Length: 488
Image (cartoon, rainbow, N blue to C red; front, side):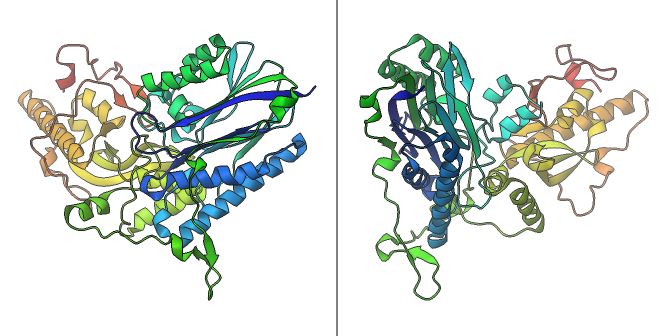
């Protein structure tokens, strides 16, 4: 049996963003959403390139051809992004998710890369058709955190795979059988990243009218803060209808009027370069603004940061190069962006039985550690009260390097207090922390006065990203008992 799609499409900037970097396309035979990222590095351009290239594959096709058509279109879009970056290095860092499908009358040929999503509502049950290519989703897959914890994880938008001009951009391809009265939803994370699946389901179950359902979904995203661009495609699977099949496709978002720079071959090298009219003058940054730009990280994550401007490149430290190469080999281009983001994050943990400041993120992806020691302190973990020993061993998230220094200072104070108590009680006295040298070559953490205390009885992030509360053991009291935090 052959069906038709009755579809609606909507894209907007949301309540916080200054511009819309999402793009979308809906037609009688295609649905696709692209969520661009890269901020000043042109996320809107990336999503425009993806949509413009993929919609060329639109049309009546057999299900057997959809994989090749969609993968080919995505590959061509990726090549275009690579050529644009080569022609204009200022675009390095742009990328886009892609979540789309070709409708063949009774089936969907699916294409997916990134964290935009496709849902199928059938018989009142909402099914997710795609699997997020995100770091937090990998933690869920490994059983390190729950779906509930993933929904509020601070790094839930850190992407491992996107379309960004890098060679390792293999998408997920799938096929889905459809039934009469199915309802399809394709969206960027401006909706699904802020509105729970339960709310999405309730809206599209209780609202038969497509226009009304669309309005309610967008309103729900607004109530959740509207902190990102919002792109939503809704489609009902209905009996075959010639009029519906004859509808024109609809482009929404940045791709409506986004301009893709023209590329021409260099007369000597044959390498793609920007046409003269598309060459942009380099802005000259001076003074405080120049310093601010030089320190701004290139981010591929954290919703309020994933569109941030790209900053200057840092010096090539050997360890950084090794880590970059490893992640690039394991995860591809998206992993490189994730690594760049992780370089802006810090946490306090244990290294060689001592308290240390780590740069990066706790945990690992595919066996690859996402954090490395930035500074080794002279505080031994065993000198701390048991409660804080556990806090350090499960890692303490901090807001930045200064906050990490403050945390280490607070831990040193508690360690010194425990050492003094043990001496006064006549028990076995550990060697004072101050007399224990840090490992050779390790920078010493200096105390930073005047910072807000960051160590306390609240829950902390575990290496896998889960929120954990200290549990009783033979050597430690729970934090709820009087004085438990300070017991030595």
